[in-house]
Amino acid sequence: MFAPTLLVDRSIIVTGGGSGLGLAMAKTFVSYGAKVTIAGRSGERLERAGAEIADSAREGGEVATFPADVRRPEETDALIARAVARFGRADGLVNNAAGNFLAESAALTPNGFDAVVRTVLYGSVNCTLALGRHLLERGAPGAIVSIVATYASLGTAYALPSACAKAGVLAMTRSLAVEWGGRGIRLNAIAPGPIPTEGAFSRLMPSPEAQERALERIPLGRFGRPEEIANLATFLLSDLCPYQTGDCVTMDGGEWIAGAGEFSDYRKLPDDRRRRFFDSLRPKKSGER
Image (cartoon, rainbow, N blue to C red; front, top):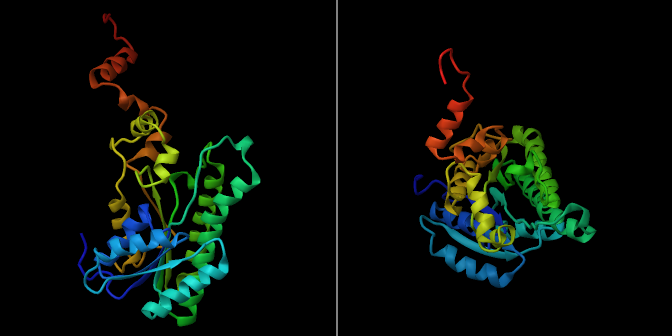
């Protein structure tokens, strides 16, 4: 899709890089020559992912792993230091580490709320500020991409901690895009729709019936693919869009806008039934039956 050398010599950090979207993005980045540091809490998972990512590397692409808990500022500082020590500098970041679960909000415990918000919101803020300080000290440009959700702007029932945290990450993205824009640091977000990945997808859509209902909401009639998000993240981290900052790009097969339309669900009817129904609503002309 892009020139093979698009990200050559770019040092990029990916949190939650041991599986799912993080792994897919890291593999794509190294395939375009980036030097990628993946972070996560499981060292064993990171090592397995690192070997898989290395197989995708070309044009100078490399991968390093670093176990880190993004909820802890001292560990995110160490993560940036690790990338700088290994690759000489850090140029980009993908805030991908996340957690989520479904629950009735009235039954939420403080610990349940805290677990998600500290990983998603605190973790993204910790990593972003750590990289931002490094870039500002160097007087260097950089690019930061945060993975949010389509409900970051509107909220969602039954996932209150995630909705609050993702909204905060989006606010951080737009706030720092203004504050740091004059220093050449761009911040953007990606709001994916449902994408089957290891772990999270099975917890949030645990049955074929739940997946079928989700598919019915998507005009394109399918779930997204990790490589599609990886391609978009590659574009946003590259020099192909130097004027794009403070933006949130939605990639959800049309689910978000379809859900906002009062009459969008009529698309689910068979064509002939829908047309007959619409015809039945037309005012009758004189002489018509």
